[in-house]
Length: 151
Image (cartoon, rainbow, N blue to C red; front, side, top):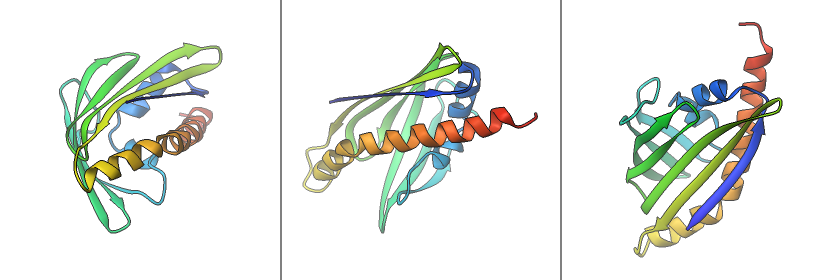
């Protein structure tokens, strides 16, 4: 399955890429009521880095490990190594447009064939529009604040 989402941010592609390459920002753009606890992640994500985290859906912990690949100035990919999906690959692209950057997310995913993880994956797939709408809103809010404040 493929999910695509795009949104505009009033910041340069460099600022947007820098924001997304800070592993700690993943928690800032994760919508409530999901809680994210970072396990392992470098301060700045680079080619080949591994990050691990736990998403808490109420009392249910969902552990995830991802590898960062295909890093270049206008994007990168995170690929699930271990987690709830049979396959998950999320491509982040940052394209310059007038007055800012268009953030383009493309997720290729396949739920597991499993009594529990299968329905969980389908449910998570159905919730991607809400997840990415929140991420777009929060990213705009955080980057607009940081670009309007004196450095």
